[in-house]
Structure formats: structure tokens, C-alpha cells
Length: 408
Image (tube, helix red, strand yellow):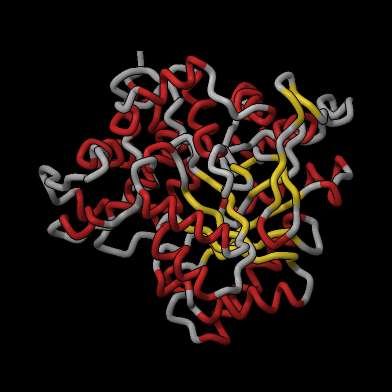
């Protein structure tokens, strides 16, 4: 019998090679799109909210497509009532956008859905002057539109902005203004894992229509994060929540002190959506079962007795080991390794099972600040204020990448 590390290591290598095949096999199916979309659920009408000053009204549960590689899943999501699909240029090396575009085209529902994509600034582009940075961002967006087979998207995000300096980088900001003016996007947004600093800067800049932010139950104690997101909403910026289930901890093959009950996923999603400053959430389900489970909350956000019991058990925050990207661990490391990036890489590889995202994240870490530096240490002394077992996760990343094409 294979041990867990062997299975995960194989998945890390093989899964990307299977994506194109899966898309080709399932891309033509229209079996799931036989009936008109549902307007109500067993628990009531689908709850909808307005996305800030955009004026767009969306169901409270949307689809984060990042981890999905089955076109039929997008069709079933639409059939249930999902109307917002979130993708990005970097997801599955562009194949994710291609899948979204083809499914929406085949269904003929472009005018009935809200499509968001994201463009990130690569490390080697950060030193570009304003004109060149703007040109590069626009070029990337044009390629996204081609993959999506669309002349515009509804929301274009400046993606993964995790510092104030990047938040006001003039090249991308000028590109966003131009693309909106030209009608290549209806609205512009910013996505971040560094909530307080970056969202505060986004409010100050007063140019973004939407923010995409990390929000989940492990942050329930953090009034700074909650207050900043609410302040953005009150300023008219539409708020979309990601990482709502704390990094996909439901995966049964992930090391956890104890298995999470299925009810945990609806409880965690409801907790996020019970903050009325959140318009919609984009859980990254990749199976039909999880799609149905997540969408089941759209008619009623009241907690069941079982959900209340789960949320009352405060051990979940420690159990989830969710990295909040605060960066304190970086300062605690003698080599100043980019620990937050390694923690996200671990989440993508072992919790999401998304090899492409893990590979991209690892490759983007500056030389000398990634796993190659960690391999020089016999033991990791970094401690996390939020209960993340940093040493164990780095050890698992080392084992996962050792001797593979992803070795850092």
C-alpha cells in the first residue's frame, strides 16, 4: 500500500497532465443543461445581494473555478442558480479561462452571467516603468479575453496584491483605467491575501469597484480584518469573499488532528455570508457533491443545531492551521524565507490538490527565499501566532518536491 507522501507526490506530477484530457472528454456534454435554472431551493428563494456601486445583483454563492477541471461542473452550477464565475490568467496555465469561455459560449448564456478574471504582476515585471508596466498588463488581459472568447469581462482584478507598494503601482493602475474606459471590462477590482493594509489602500485610492478578500472563521477574533472589510463595503466597494472554508480542509487525505464533519463546510460558509457586507462568496468546489453542499445555503443562512455545535467548538481554528499571510513568520526566520508563500504552496498542493497553483507559487518565490533555503536547515524554528505548524508543512513540501521537476 502506498504511503500518503507517495500518493500526493504522484498527484503533484500527474494531475496537470490529466486536465486537458478531462476537458476534452467532458467539454461537449450537454446532459446537465436540460432544465431551466432553479429560482428557489428547498429552504427558500435564492438570496441575492448587490455588489457595491456596480449595481450588479448576485446570488450569495458563486463559483471559484480555480480548482475545477470538469466543464460539466460549471454547467451544473449554472443549472442550480450560480451566475458569477471567477477565474484567472494563471489558473491551470490559462486552461481554466479556456474552459470557462467554452462552457459559457456553448450554453449561450454570456449575457446572463458575471465573469471575473485576474491579472497578476510577475516578479520580473515589478521594476518596469509605468508605460511598460501598463502595456504588459494590457497585453496579458488581451490574451485572457482571447482564451475566454469574450470581448469583455464584467470584473477585471489586479490579482494577488499583497503589499501597499504593489497596490499603488502605476503601470497596472493605468492599465485598469484604460481597459475600463475601452469597455474591455465593466468594473475593476483588486484581490489580496493581505487584507488590512491593502484594502485600506484600495479605499484611499478610490478607484476600485470590487475587492476580493480572504475571509473565514479562523479570523472571527480579528476585529481589524472584519472592520477593514466592512469599511470597504460602506465606501461603496463590492466585497467578494474567498478562502471561505479555510483552505479546503475538508479533503480527507490532509493531515488534521481529527476529521471534519460534513456539516463543517456549510457552517463555515454561512458564517462568512452572515456578514451582510459580503455580497457573494466564491468557494472553490471541484466536485458535484461539494457544489450541491455549498449551494444548499443560498435559501437560508440560519445555523442548524449541528452547525451551531461545530462553530461552538473553538478548536477548529487551531485544527485548520490556516495561514493568514500576516508575514510575522518571515521576520522570525533567520534566512528570511518567504514562509507565507510556502504556506500557500502547501495549501494549493495538499489541500486543494492543485499542482499548477503550487508550482506557480513556488516558482515565483525570489531565489534564496524558498525551499532551497529551507533544505539547508535541519529543523525549523519558526512559530506561527495562528497555530499553523510551519515546520511540519515545510517538511511535507520538501518531501513532495524532492527529486521532482518542481524541486526548488
